[in-house]
Image (tube, rainbow over all chains, first blue to last red):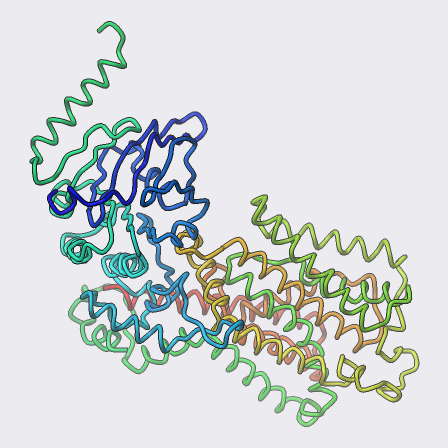
Length: 262
Length: 360
């Protein structure tokens, strides 16, 4: 789309491959993410969307190919490494700790501490910052002291997204942020992500199965089929019908290639 | 608090007729919530009740220094082991070897000492050795994915065997810093260090109190503590948030061993001899019992160090009191069993009731 068209590429993958045992999940993924852009990843179950995201965030390591962050090749060995380079992730499984209060969940992995090496928690500061931050981005929870298990599913996901948004310096990866979410709760998360997208501060990759959501949220869509990106379409220049048609014909092509002398 | 009131107000309307849902008054809900959130309260009340009962039944015999110190003597080792064990229960792991580590550490000290190593250094090396034992427990558990129940059960047997092999099944005495029990001379002639390290009647329990407070603060107030709770509550979520979950686990195994080993050395100095026939499982089962009585579930993510300490005190008071009123030791086991089941059932019911009142 226009805002991102000329923008520089912040994240790029070239021929990324990954296999789990005999299962070849990624067979050479090429994609580009531009500064400030929201890129949607779609594809069937097992197409490799989650695997790709887990490579980009350092949870898995690719077998082949290259990942370039701001033009430089990177190879994240852990989530912490990716995070240190400004890449944050919201996972599809519930990432919060049920027994910890909201504010400690928000700061998990980035705790504020005092008394130097003793690393005592600065609870007051974390509480205050959490309260202010959640107000600012319009996330409503009963209290920042409420344990995560006291929240509704939507509130929990909102807190998880809020945590990643706050920490993300360059790139935010969202793996099915709307999974198992009701209409009202989805709305909450979409508005949250849109608010962040409009600031153009960070670039995002979103995985979701709901095309209506993706068309609303994203600037561009990439379709993953059989471990490769087969379609790369700007949302402005395409409609849901066109995209579906493209996907079907692409499937047909793959099928024909796979069936000898049909 | 507000949601309880709302629910209490809404309850009659939303309730289908004939449904067997217990209706509790607002005050009842409040009390329930208090007990559910302050898990230490239940064992404190039970302990207080036992103390009152024994005071009535045994009078000043129970409140004498001798009786109270013997209650502390029962509780000390159990509490010392339980304080470290809580950390592992919060992680949804368990350390079954801690009881044997408690017995093993003073043997290491003793062997080194009889080989001419100065007593202070022998204690330091013994502590390092048991830290190593904890590290092995932890590394096997997280690296080889062996359940900690199995890893530490095996470690328990290994350490027991080592004691039997290298002690020639002979009781060890004298112990450095301690008074040989045969002289029966009390603390006469023992230096300040010896008194501090266990010879004084109250030193063991005071050490354990101090350690319990430190570990409590660590679990509730420090970054490491939050990471223990996070790892135990949702290991995947914690790892994804950047918590080094394996490292956290290994350190907790090390801590559990170090605490048990240290209190074991204090206990050995207190009694002045080592019996190779002691079996660690006896100790660890009391310690896990103390944790449970104190309000720690074995499901991970929750636990209280203070509760575990109080649980151990409860066991100590029970053992001392029953002995004083002339009930046999066999009855003591029955009572410990009943208290453990009672405490665990209460915990589970509290959880269910809280969950039910939270349900929208």
